[in-house]
Length: 304
Image (cartoon, rainbow, N blue to C red; front, side):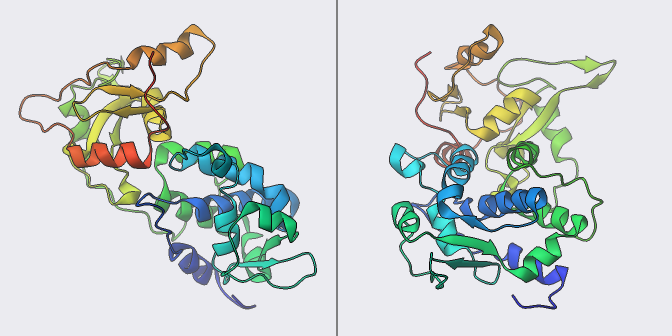
């Protein structure tokens, strides 16, 4: 990316991020690194950062909002892959002597620390995201393409981003009209996990239509790819704390911990049958359950 580029060019580059295929799992490493860099730039005025400084917070983001890792040591160094492979139209990476590090370099945390790797968004990118509206549009594009609405606010909080600037021409993924209402009606306006059915007068409150396979990951707006959940259990479902079995029972991640009675109540969902939809409405398709187990659910099922 060179001087004189426009906001449209930046958004086009962000929309075209190459997606790594890591064992068939989604790999949101690059968008999460970028969102972290956007937050850093908004707070400090620069995106420049040594890998040694970025490794822990960026790896933590990927662990929290990406698929789980079985290896604890690998989980601590997940920032290495996007640090090396982020598109160079957006990103420059050098070693301690100032020499450029190419995309064929090893994406190993230990090696990046050893060579004193430092990365920075290119000057043209920094000039563009110095405009709050552009920064907000760039962040929204990444969030909408790679995550779910339930996670967007959590990610922004984690990286220190405020994307409340007025929206403009950033195209949003289209949702099928009436999808949410159809799902809520199919589940009788009740959370299929806990039974919450609150309403204010005649209007249901605190209930949402949750995609099983995320809309941003080619999940269709159909009842067999959705379930009605309360706001809390929707967030936990999208974070991978909660999941489903193929026989439509609730799974609770063994990584989930809580101290209070209210927090521990989540463990009580483990093994509970998911409420069935109304007669004539389809249950969740097994292919979407399998996608969620592989791509979102964190760790092993709790024994609780």
